[in-house]
Length: 215
Ligand code: SF4
Image (tube, rainbow, N blue to C red; front, side):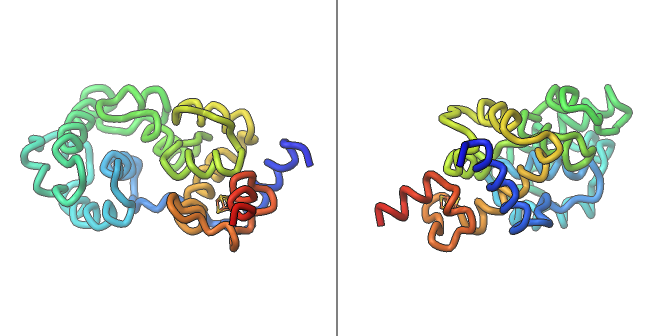
């Protein structure tokens, strides 16, 4: 089987196994998703959802966050790692939205990435989930699983991984592939103990084949 066919098969199986893979950060608006994604750096979605359930009941617009000082926001999110930096970024991002976009989140990947505290991964998450703009956000799960499956080859950085994935996956599948790789990484292809023996992708996975052979 050639590489192209192998990749096609992997995407097909991921689609069968995780037909409903979706963003697991709870949100009801693009702004809430933007805040939740900023909060999710180095934290689990579950923990972020616990914090945002309480936080969004109090504040959930750019106006509300722009009126806060970072110091006033810090206690609301202090269960999360890097909370001081996140508080600073969320307030600065909200003020930038008020100043430049009437408080709305721009439906544009580059405009998103230009906001304070918003990196490429966050911009891709918001663009794809809030605005249906095809994008592949590369987090730690996507990076790891894509390499193990040979969907990318020796991409050293998340950006290089994203570039290779965009080349190797049809554009119509970018957003779904992102969710499905994350689902697979959280449920089967875990960082320390990938469960290759019970993985439906084993026959197509170079890393899994190696691991199973090595016993
Ligand atoms: Fe991950 Fe193993 Fe499955 Fe490959 S076979 S995707 S390494 S769990």
